Every structure is written in structure tokens, then in C-alpha cells.
Length: 333
Image (tube, rainbow, N blue to C red):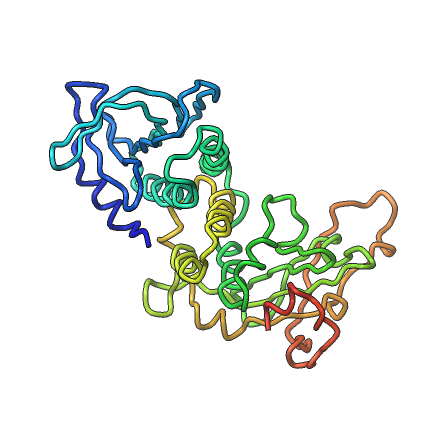
């Protein structure tokens, strides 16, 4: 199992070589032929050995990320051993430690699921996913961190992480937080004593064949303590129980896309885990006070409202069996 923290610590200890721009200090990666090195600007660089030499994959240059194929350079190990070879070089052009740590972790996960010497085509597919993640980190954040934390709590408290993560939304335009066929889950959190949540008109008026549960919980900010967990803490807990690398990458991708430039808050804002877990409950949307689409006057749009569900009976209390055939909902209880 890859020790991400150890590898990042070894990377931070590397010294850059400024005298020769084509020679880099590197560390070896466990059970891989690839290397992790440092640029003269102190940027992290992955040197990936590929199985083919044809120059048939274009380089990628983005604001934070660059990918260059068939680059001849010399890498120098900590024991002084030097290797001149052609590599695909993936560089994150930032000195931000948070971003560097996330870059190293996510790309190591990608490398671990590839062959020992992947083709450039196979590498380019993973690189596109990497570009998607780090392009999101330079965009406007799409959700407040509390909402993301609440969604992660639903996953962490579930019985099947893979199903929930694969059903998790991949864009801010998604109407519901989790969707698997006709079954959907919308997550709502509040810091007040009562369960008062805001909804859009569409959220509580799904298609006739849809089945929708509303997850409700109390989420209050906390200090860093045994009960106070951050997004990063929940991410780590979930990852510990996931063996499928694609699922881990999807989990990280959605976190990155959600937080955008607020990614540095992933490990610095804490919420009371025990209070949230104790108050987590699920409600059939049909029991929630709502405005029906048929009641909205013509030419009226963007309708939003708040509903108080404090005194409603949740699914578990009602001993409801109407959702027993749902793969998605069966992960929750």
C-alpha cells in the first residue's frame, strides 16, 4: 500500500538542481519504475516510463499542469545513481503545499492502476482526468464546504461506498446529489435546532417514476478534536475502505471540482461528526411540505422555498419497506 505522506515528506526533502536544467533530483516510487522529482522552481514532477517511443500524443499545457512526452533528461537518485532516459514528464506548476500534496497523492493512485510501463495512449487517458481535477482547482467554488462535508458523511455512514460514490453527482447542475436510475438522494444540512431546509421547486417535484429521499442532518462547525472532522478526515476514512482505484479517483475528482480554489480548506475546517451522525435521517419527499408545479402561476420561475421537517417521521421510524428493492437506498440503512 502506498504511503502518500511518506512520499510527500521525501519529496519535500529534495533539493533542486539549478546548474543543469535537464538534470533533476528524484525519489523512486514503491514497486514502480517511475520517479518523483523536483524542478528548479521547486515544483513536483513525475517522470513516467512509457512502453512506446512514437511521438503520437500531443503535449498538454494548462495553467497549473503541464504534460510533456518523450522528454530526454537525467534523473539523479538520492544514492547518487544517475539515469539518462526519455520520460513523460507531468509537472504541477505551483509552490502551494496543499496542491502539491493532492497532486502527488492523486497521480500516484492513477499510476498504481496502470501497467508497469503504460503506453502513452493509456497515460494520456489518466492525464485528461488529472487535467480535469486541476482545472477545477482554478475555477470558482461551486458549493460551500459544509454541503460537501454533509454529502461525504452520507457516503461514510453508508454500507456500500462504491455504489454511493458512483451515484454521486459530477457537476453543480445536477438536480440531486446522488442518482442511480429512478432512485435519488438529496442531502440537506442545517446548523439550527430545527430541521428547516431550502429547496428549489424542481427538487421536490421529481418525475412521476422517480423515488426520492431527502437526507437531513445537523452540521455545526467545530474545533479540531476527536469529534471534529474535516473534509480531508472524511475522505481518508472513506478511502481506507475502498480497494477500487477508479472509485477513489472519482471521489477525489468530485471533491476537487466542488471546492475549486477553496481546496486549501479541505483539512482546515472542522464539523462535529458525532452530532451530524446522530441526527442523520432520511425522509420520503412526498411527506415534505412543498409547492407543486401545478400551483405555480404561468411565467413564474426560479421558485425556492423553505420547509420545516422537524416533526416528520423518517424512513427508519416509519419502518417503510417501499424502497427495499433499491440498490441505492439499501446502502443507507
